Image (tube, rainbow, N blue to C red):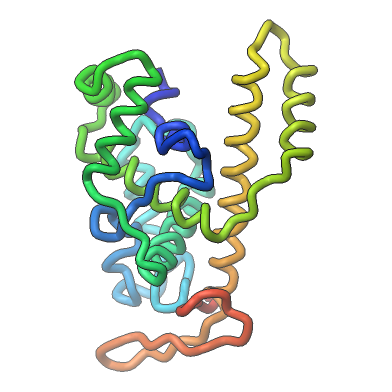
Length: 236
């Protein structure tokens, strides 16, 4: 059940090209997890500074309290890391004009349903049965698409030799008959996801070093040598 509710199978839903050709997600349809939190919160509530963008403890608490099915088992550290990476992905998406429209989310949902052997109506009904609504599910799909689309531009694809080694390791550890193709797809996806996370973590670290200047009306980001993107950040 979880395999088609969780948006992590979007790589397959985004087309046969795999991670490098993932459908885009957009700032216009996505909800930047840090939107509205740019230096507008109490200092004691700020958990992570990404230049003028912040991740707050309240944002982490609210995500955990929502208890959505795709967050099952997520720890506080998991949610914090996810919010930081998504904030970074949205910044890069804005800078690089990466966009997605409603039809891209429609296509992803339809392909997820098709892979699960159910209709789109049945997919959404299952989402509802798990305690979430369609709007929240589509928003999650969009967020995942933002991350993977940005990741396709900034992450390094795992070498085939490393993927093959991971497939061999998983096959040797399997306790029951499994399809090599299925194991290959799972291993490739896991390694690609790790590469995207690593690339976003590096970008976040760069932005944490960006100096900022707070005026009475706005926060202004400075420049730092070696920052990979237009507007990086500084640590707390």
